[in-house]
Image (cartoon, rainbow, N blue to C red; front, side):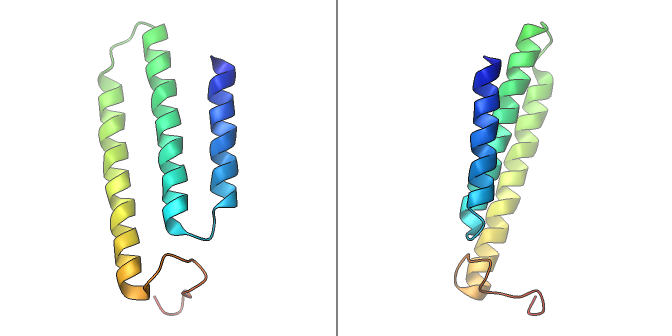
Amino acid sequence: MYIFFILMFVFGCITFISSRKHLLCTLLSLEFFVLILFSILLFYLNFMKFESYFSMFFLSFSVCEGALGLSILVSMIRTHGNDYFQSFSVLQC
């Protein structure tokens, strides 16, 4: 089971590193990291016989993080027309 979590984390890192051109791909790989952390947290809490209330807090914060990322993506597409990182400079913002 630990090897499965490690492989998922490594694949998430590879995806995050290789998809630096588009903001949407970067946000999707970050959400994949959140899902990995959530599954590790649930596995740990069930293994140690703890309550799962903390996992609900983690899930609510991850939903807020996803909504914030989508709002940044929508505002970037409205202002620049696409989600390429190379299409805008820091001086324009």
